[in-house]
Amino acid sequence: MSKNKKELSAEQREELLKTLQNRFEKNMIRHKGLEWAKVLTKLEANPEKLWSLDDMEITGGEPDVVGYDSQTNEYIFYDCSAESPKGRRSLCYDRQALDSRKEHKPESSALDVAAAMGIEILTEEQYRELQQFGKFDTKTSSWVKTPGDIRKLGGAIFCDYRYGTVFKYHNGAESYYAARAFRGSLRV
Image 1 (tube, one colour):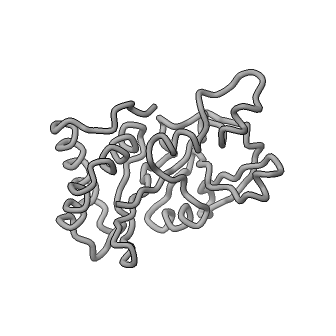
Image 2: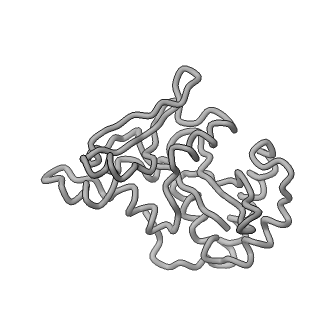
């Protein structure tokens, strides 16, 4: 799912920046009061973050700016695809869950893929924030960061959006489904 080389060619970089700018300009509701020129300056100063954003894009996440943290001077990107990213589906929750499966193992786990991409899996709170910008996961679902006490008991949490409401559910962490992936966040 991830590329081994964490550097984009000039052509890849230019194409990604153009895609991100177009998405930024088309979805101003997600980042009112923020300017693309300032985001671009931060992106150009952090090429390793561009690599992560490219991975988010390639796997179907459609990353976009959803906020700015003035304390850390960082722009916050979330996966904003309408449905859970196609290139990250059919993953169990974490490495422990993957290792516990005796047969029919998925390719990897959500937390392993997120780490390889250099991003964080959304928390339930972040997932709910994302829903303020539209209707996401109306046909799919997304793993979210699971509290340690739940994970210790073998469970993992996922969310989706149905009937005008964000629902939070649980599964065994080793489960995986063709309609479930994870959404990530990245700070630049």
